[in-house]
Image 1 (cartoon, one colour):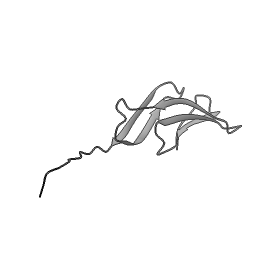
Image 2: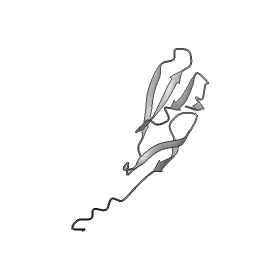
Image 3: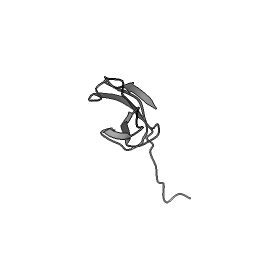
Image 4: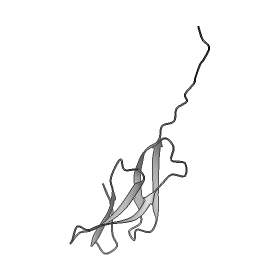
Length: 81
């Protein structure tokens, strides 16, 4: 998913939706070569189902992102009749 053009317009930054941890790629427009520039990991990854949206600076050094988390509780009952 494309996110931002580089400063000089020779590359585009993006990420693959659904990938965990979410990696930010810099793709050279002329060659198509992909380089991972950052891995986005929430502090507590338990229950994280998606990292989105991702916003980054044109120089690719600053990142902002949000994530969706799905937590649940499991109860165990024993000795019931």
